[in-house]
Length: 405
Picture 1: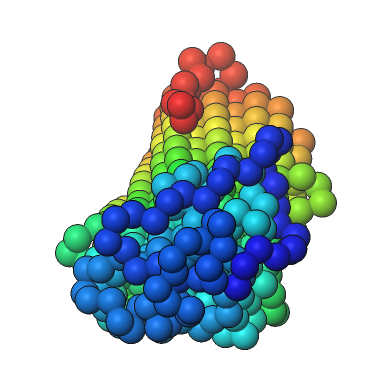
Picture 2: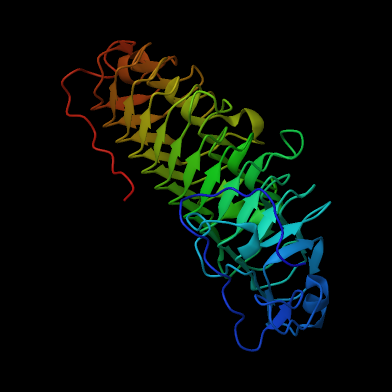
């Protein structure tokens, strides 16, 4: 279980940081060496089983085989704990790497678990499975690469859970659907979970997907400040109440898997999509589509986003009633800029700026007593072309979308 050679993604140049030292009082796992003096356990499972609830287990740099089953609150520290996984150079000799035929870590219904500073790589299952309704957790500063999914989790609260400063790269080990997601919420609600300041790369399904449970919506889910590079979708939002997707950046090259960047699937209420910057490749930037949910979403706010160079910038499909599309900037769509489908009704579209669409800047296929004979309300939108005429008007002061700092 000492140093070994394995291919890991290196996010930057420079020498890898040496392993962080074990904190005082921690159980130490590993094989005795210069970098792992005085280990007290040969395996992670042995240390986890022996540790008291609330105890700390430090795992020296090296390669370890899972699964590891965790049934109590613990602080689990890898050799790079406390160091941002998005930016740290990674070499095998300085990382604690977990590989498993199934999940790397399998977490029971425990509260206040910390997992910090590991690399989960090449597992036949997910890097971390924690969908047995744990209370809360903190999963920070870890690398997830080449697993089925990065993690598959849920949470019951009431304390908030945090997924932050991790790097998720190409977790696609298996058919798309069961596999291909960085952070996957299934088998229950993800209540009070914050997914913030992570790097996601090249997932065949999505960076974040809140499938959850149609009978028990996730409450208070926050996805903020993340960066997505060449993921098929960045966020798939489903079965959520009061969720926020804010201040994220997603870019896609033409070689990336096609997909909607932010996909509002259905059965979601009071969702805010705001201040995101989305660009590149084919597909829709932001789509409200109830086709795959148990019911259309309600009370949606799509506010102050920038969508560039997509096929369609923003789309609201059939059966949505309470949606506001406000103060967004849509640029360079190869198809339409903002499009409302025939079944939309009571949607408010206001203070948006749409420019450079290859099709039509502003499109509403509904009919009714609203703006220009549609069933929706369009006000103060700037755009050169619209169908029907009058939805977006050249010369109206364009919206100013806030961008993430």
